[in-house]
Image (tube, rainbow, N blue to C red; front, side, top):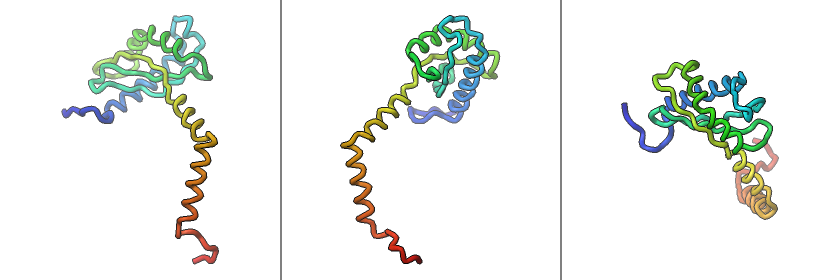
Length: 146
């Protein structure tokens, strides 16, 4: 078996990550958690990233409908042992990975980029570039048809 150096995750890592993500959603949906901070909390599990040796995983989560990601992540990390035990019952893996939770900040990042793109100065630059491309192009339709 060859090892990947750095780079993109292997197909197996991606497959195991998706299996873990689906299992997490099922476990969270059942509501078997005893932590009062996790009662009636709805969580969106956006991605589960698995280490190359498949022994540890990081789940990226967002509270459904908004709320404090940091408080949610702390509570989920306290229940990590429970999730690992549940994985052993639900998944057929040689090694059940340990799970760690992180807030998914990609939505915040995308929102920030969206704000920047709509900033008047940036929007005027983007509008100017789009207009100059149409003026410079020789492939414009002159309306005569082919």
